[in-house]
Length: 383
Image (cartoon, rainbow, N blue to C red; front, top):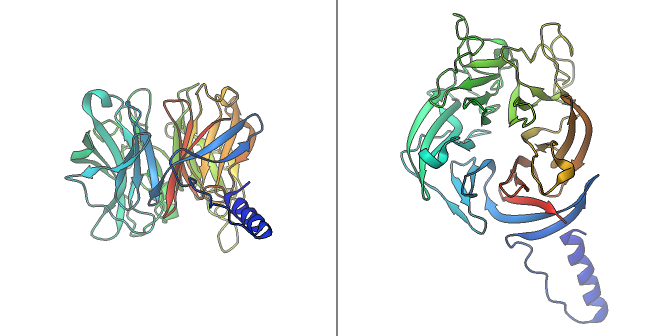
């Protein structure tokens, strides 16, 4: 039963008995069980671990189990399991914090224990507008310093939306980075721009060797795939090593894709989505030279962060893909077989607000953040 319903029933009882009942307390405390939920295969608890997050966007665990959380307003927080602290940012790049822009994704270097390097993406201000950029800095204690801008995307857009901006290291140590079409849809098909692309970079922000367009004079060498709209989810499939991607469609046509070198994923020539004002987009849903999504959502759920679950806490969920969704404010669980979605279940609909990101913790539990002005960090655990 929800908290507001409990409070209402207690007020009725209080009036009927003619006495006062002490108000409920503790629901805002860390590690508070908010509700119990039943999935198709398991009953789990939802805990709110901390509040007071201002539009959190990205999160990543460190080897010492502390959790980094970015806020779109340009702040970086760290949660140590019991308290939330703000990281001091020194020598930090200027951040464009308008519209959908701000401090976005974050991930530690694969060898963080040796070099203390943190990578983050943000909207980089330009003389006209802004663009998606990648930077790194050293985290020592609660201070992030010695920042370096590693890569600034060429997007030619003065809008303040569709930055993309998820980052993920693969097993070879290369960094995948998403860049949205920046609201200029046809730029997603242009190989002389980074807009609407998935990039594959070295740890220093350079084009990764073996990228498909490295030797093409009319294409940017960082590009790994193209034809994307606004990709905001990246996860490595532990069973195959493939990089999976979620991306926002327009009105319908949200996509789940497996990213392959040099592939064209179609936007805006093919899509399952429609114009917001009505009417079709492009040439339909199929093209012989363009890749089909593994899965598409119509109507849109506005998919954001994604993660594959590999933990021991939920044995029946092992190998499942979890997708955080902004629209309908839910978490999607999908069972995958042979790179196909064979079952989908929607969890937590409307319970915690717009879910921006989901990740697995070192404890084998699932963690998620709600993208609100009063956003929060939550944990799912078995009942």
